[in-house]
Length: 358
Ligand code: F6P
Image (cartoon, rainbow, N blue to C red):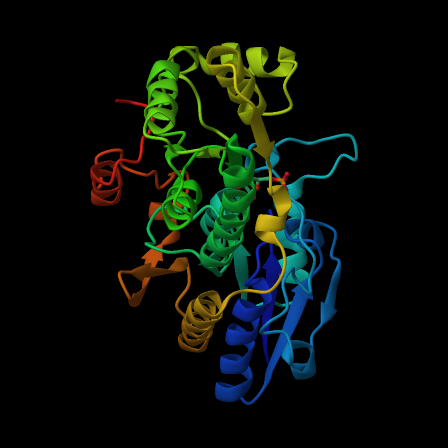
């Protein structure tokens, strides 16, 4: 009997189930005697020995279903070695569960923090295979993560919907897109939705550039302007602050998010109405789109093959359109940022889109 553990960790996304289905189909197809144990709510299930024995039918009919049949939770990596109120040594507990259940390996579907924990468990001697999950597309070592494209669809749709109402009223609109540290989602949705101004965490903005872009459009007779702003976008002044100082400023701010502060500043300067739309967690919800179903099936199947071949300590990744594997140790602890000088931004700027820096 080959017994495989599986868990989904961190913020969810649309294609978690589709990816698990890909893994499971390969395992049930290729191995005669295999059992999959599904841990509840990510690493928490592994810590507290909370799991269920999965049946092949559990993985049927879930290709199009968002969320995760296993549940998920955030277990911050920085607290993995910290003993908290319940006295649990989390790493020791996870290792114990793994050994007690006689697991041969653990398949982890997770984002950046979860990859760090996957690497930690691998270094602690567990056999781990991971898969790159996140709507942020910010995992180092892969060109694409599952969940990203479905989120782009939703954020783009939000911008599309805003276009008609913005035009009707002649207003400035800000659509705040998820992404605290990286701006892939905002960049893709912003360009796909025809935003006039796109602000990313990687390119601190100058308010004067933003105002000039809005005024330019106004003078050209355009009735409205749409800004796609990442959750983590920041002004040039804020970018000069240290992390602690910036977090303090944010915690004392009367505004619920960066877009509200920016909106108030724009409204004050131009004297016209600014409205804010925050699609928020809708960007992680609903069904995976066909592209995500396709890539998550490929990634999941590739993870299944690694299990069959007993190759561990690796994350399945995309290099262009090729599915490859990368060592967990090279993935953990790094983020994949948008390069402000990349071709996509150069092309967008050539089209007249403002990124707040010039
Ligand atoms: O990592 C995915 C993500 O959706 C980010 O884009 C967003 O900033 C964050 O999670 C929101 O986290 P939570 O669901 O914990 O509020």
